[in-house]
Length: 301
Length: 301
Image (cartoon, rainbow over all chains, first blue to last red; front, top):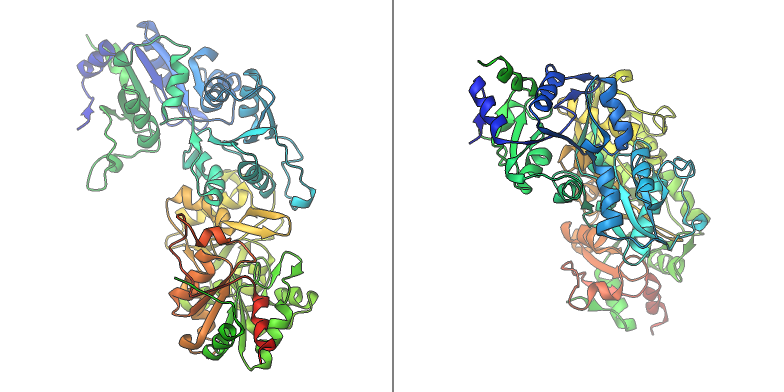
């Protein structure tokens, strides 16, 4: 059973227990283009109490640098080295864990966020935003030359997904021996201010189906993302809490990494998802309505 | 165990047993843009012996009329009423089985073959080849008006698949109560003269993933396709044989419908797929190298 936080003492206890606070962003700190009520003040309060604040997002459409400008635009304090995105984690995974040989490259199905992070990690890539790949013109294998140096295909959310990209990726994954099938993340949906759209998991789904094979997924809930943070930040998992709005990504990510977990109800998950007969088997340690509730401590005597 | 056909007597026995011969096309009668050796003569021989010949294809990119011109171009005798495609079967399913109300319409992810067949069955549709939907421009829900009259989404192979089509289909399937999720077929790959590309099943896969729901699939191996043929053609399943190159579509289709099955090895399935430790659990009644082998009867005394 999750603990429902309500009294100022509940929140004060939480602040005493945890030094490092990891936050999902969309549905937690902001929703589309506006910040969640109280989020800015709650983050400021944590910083004033010397808590380490990290932002852990599956959004791979933007690099960390571009993601920071989203914080800036909403007036939320954030630093690039506090931001961990699945594009960055994927680039680190390819260069440092998979150790893709320097003469090999990645075929990207995704947007500039992935390209920027691969570039910063010194990983070569093709596809992505290349106009030759962003086309609805017919794809023909007769006009396709297999690049034998493509050693991995990395899929993230790609709003220019098309049959040429899928066909090229399929060739690399079936014809280049050892070519790895990777996904930045597998969120089923992508939240916008006006509602849900198909998520990154929907973009790798055609290849998953055609190959009858699952990709290695880097983002939450996979532990790869946490390994990437551990390599850069010093924190004690026992004194760390993950705050998120999605049970099967954020909360599961925290649980997989041995962190405490706090679910907020300002995003995807509703009260019905965690109560009643059809409740998820993924149970967060704590539940509160909104990140703004943390401010109750400031008002406590 | 399958019976391996080899002697003229084997083929003669087969002709005596079966009056109605259903053929898959790609990988059986032709491969890409050339006919399989002996296919034309074998079909002529069956017709000369008064066999009923039917063509049963999952290819939904062309209407039956346009599909006939493929036969014509290869010099193969075929008549429109002998051709059953998954686009036609889908249109019949929507109008006659699902009985979509006349004031409702279908959102199409697919090519002109689906549109032509829906039109001929008197079913209204949107999407498909509409230039407004064949775009890589960003999709925004803010500029999208939900058409509440869309009562079904039908997915087939679509070489102009894009994020706008996926996003619109996702809206209809999540926001229009009772909107049906249909697929012409779910072939994982699409064979071309130069190799394999992602198939129709890959095009519905993003929605399947985002919705966590399988579509109703109309083409082989589903019995819907056979129901559609039964409504138009008189045949005795016990004296009918399905000839195909794919175990999980053609042969399973025949078995699901109580037909005899003959596997040919001129397409997707290789000798290795039906022998050895990793052999498929789908066992055809008969196996022969090629449709041209049927001509052995003509040379028998």
